[in-house]
Length: 288
Image (cartoon, rainbow, N blue to C red):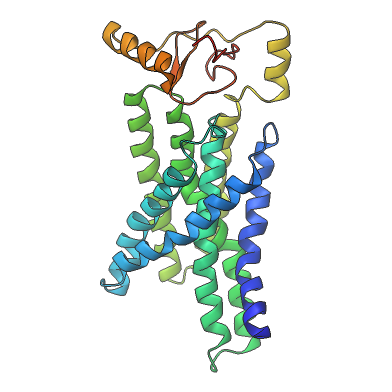
């Protein structure tokens, strides 16, 4: 029983650590703990359909093709089902934060399976288990969050954009995630350890960092945005490109309680942000 407890701690510790690390990017308006836990749990559950879809395939097809396509989709659905429509998903950065929570939930349960099987394998020495823990904790676990961060970026950006753009963002983000995931699996399968580390450290992580910095520019909750709001300064944002019919329909939908309209720039949000994510103007939901 003690061995099981130690194995669980070893398996989940990296996921919790990396989630804490990625949460540092969202200091302006931290997400509620219960929503992060819920999304993490949904990410764990998403391992089940991923396993069922990959199990019938041969190892090579499952690793290089099915795993990237299926696992990224399952993690994406975990976010959509757990938190996407929640009122706290109120800025683009939340797309990355919740994608990380789901991805690390997925990675933690996956890690438990690997570490657990190694612990109970008589052929594995303590050194073997320790090395597995270190490699997976430093490379494999955070890589799940980095890969999923691509569609998380798109999901967050798209939620506060027009529907057409949102779909394009999401399709692009999803396939970038799949590409990164496939690249990681290929290098791992070929035992190209040095190239694998370089792929994560020199390419994937900098790409994610660049995108999270871009998301941070859209938040109305950071100090720079708050100072601009206090001085009455807003961004010069053009109104969304909508036909008269689409605009009328969206405004009617907003007045019916399905969203809000920014009176300054005309953008329509299906969520209820306190400030317009485009021009930072305060949004009075009561008047909408």
